[in-house]
Amino acid sequence: MPSSSHSGQKASWGLKLAALGALLFLHVPIAIIFLYTLTPDETTYTFPLPGITFQWFGVALQRADLWRALTLSLQIAAIATLVALVLGTFAAAAVYRSNFFGREAISFLLVLPIALPGIVTGIALRSALGTLDIPFSFWTIVIGHATFCVVVVYNNVLARFRRMQGSLVEASMDLGANSFQTFRYVIFPNIATALLAGGMLAFALSFDEVIVTTFTAGQQTTLPIWIFSQLTRPRDRPVTNVVATIVVLITFLPIFFAQRLSASSSDTEGESK
Image (cartoon, rainbow, N blue to C red; front, top):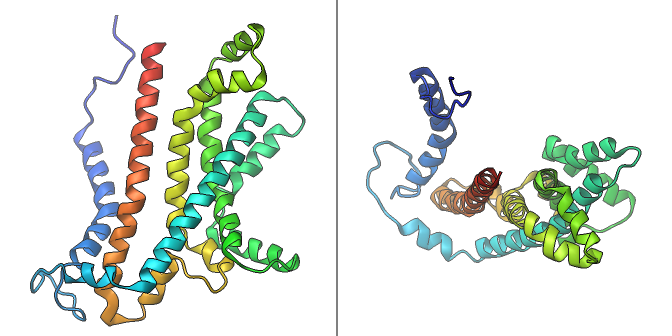
């Protein structure tokens, strides 16, 4: 009897070429940015490079304005991620565990910010904050970034809730555990990897977000805004390329580990069934 599984089939050459073309389209521009961090000529970009130098990395690391922007971006990303973990988890638990009127509408509204262009969210937040006479500050940036970070955590945790066996919670309650004990010993171990993966993705999204920051940052400068401001200075372009490379590396790591964590968690669940 033939197996219904397609895991053993090899992809066609056309599919392989299409996948390769998509990868090149996405990553060749990033490779070019990294390549031109090594050019010794600060004003002319030619290929092949006239030489190779690592001096721009040292120049970038000596920029005090860069360190201020980097520190601000990391602080915002960390706090926005913590806010998203709390709100996203509570929202996912409420939508999953409760059956109330308008549940699907609330779920849609929770997911909507990730689908909206960042500039739309930024304009909406600026108008709302201005109407309420709330001054633009560090915390308004956090609020802006948390709006789309919550979505990432919500989706990850809700998906894990839907894969979790409801009988485990019922058994815990039947055995006399209270709500806190059930969460600590049953629910949290089951959603821990989803929380970690969602948190890492939220951090990566917040760290390199620029549109929301533009409309809520006031006079403070985050790293993406710093990069844009440097584009008008041709002689600083190698330094800008160095910083762009640093941003890519910082965002790559949490996304990579989140993907590996989600994949390993799915494999474990598949083997246990």
